[in-house]
Image (cartoon, rainbow, N blue to C red; front, top):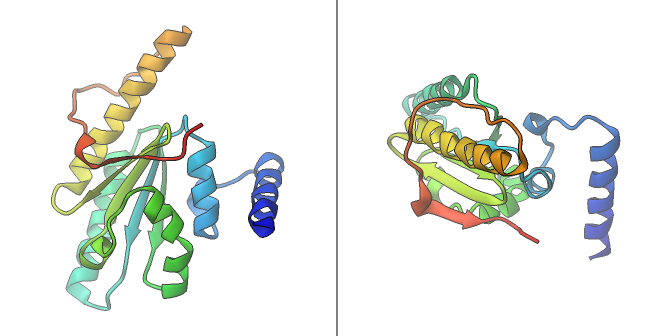
Length: 174
């Protein structure tokens, strides 16, 4: 418990006094704390494994590129987490659990998780790039509604989209 408090304090000090780059987190705890402490930002996390199978790994690489392409021009933070190494995967267990990602999914195909306003959404399987873009547009609409309430001017990314609410979990909270 004392170690957890110390880690939280060190993270807070580092976060406030040094520029933290979300895309280059060192472990799952850093990512977990970022998702909890930055609820107003939209985060996209690409969880994957390499299998040493040329065809399977090629599909993963292509999917990563498609998702990055869909995110161009979006106001989101994007990062990738390679869970191939067992020790590294253990360090991200807390984040995977928090986002509600079912055990074993990344063994069959990558998982794209999104977090906004302490809610998490994950997508797995066919249609990942399209669903990722649509879900992010839903997040942006939520931000626009909140901005209108406070008198801020909304930002439009255009077009309507569906929301992947069937795979939603709550993250943290007050």
